[in-house]
Image (cartoon, rainbow, N blue to C red):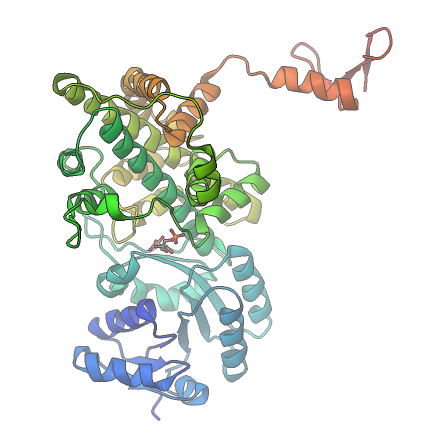
Length: 479
Ligand code: 6PG
């Protein structure tokens, strides 16, 4: 077998297959490998005309088909299957070769794998890939980590197969060393959960409070998609809402069980945020909303609890309410991204990744699930001020939230009065109000901790740590 393939893909389920085709369509010779060879041959049979493929059956053949330094992409399930594939191929590789993991791996696993393989001189490149099967084929947003050296060899190929942003720039950047790429992808997914939850809340408010039908709401989303909310998720929401179930003639959204599933990357985003001490309350509410939806028994047992049932508004008020919901959705979206970018910045500090937040927002403008016009403005905000403490410190976003806030509050008043849950909108507003508060009840929390556990507190007027003798004469001592 001649060692002519510039890249090899092992794991030819839908994502791996489509990425392999994408490389081939872009002029690269692609070596193919799969645990069951039938899938490899099926790919060549069906799509062989799209480019140059080298079908291989054994690990040895696969590795031998690759030019040096070898670029070997693994597209298998995260966790043990990924470790198993690495163990299979690593002994066959040589210093300078690259293993690229394009699955949704946990960044800590990526850090461990990178460390282990570095000793052997192999570059392990944990790479986020977003855009689903369509993106993998026609251009995903790609978030590689790993060494600079590996990016020098691999980057141009990834740039070629990636989505292109509206200004034609490739949606790929070297996020940083070791696990940086998978960390960025994890937060991308956390933001994706939050975006989807906020859109879901907007839908439910338009349905239950404004009284619109799914088809009417689809039209409202289509209109929103021509404005500042222009995004892939708003666009597909309109498609889903206007779809009618062929079997029953009912809106599709009414025949689907209201229990959301998750593979877990949103949950990781929240778990890691807790470890890093970053408040990602909007993303957390989105994860919790999915888990609450899945507790069918608990929900059935709670259905008779007291509370209002929404009474739809009349036509004239409904349109005004829809405008308010747009404001609330946009303001809450700004908060979700603020929280997500805070987490990336905290992860970057913690692990010395030096992640460029402007570059991350730039590569999310195309190909990925959260792609949106709005990301161009986030990029502009970070480009203008790379040390921006928070997106809310950007003047344009701050002004937009200022303009939206009355409506945002009114929407939450209506939701609360009518008993419609809006945990995402509400957490976002609470975060915003907490950030701008002069004083928070954390002072009282400190007093309580000092009372029951002598945990000490700091004073506003003097340096040092103090403890009050709560059980004695309540005098204060310096701790
Ligand atoms: C992407 C998506 C993708 C994700 C699933 C949904 O960026 O292309 O985020 O990576 O795995 O589409 O994940 P859940 O099952 O967790 O909702």
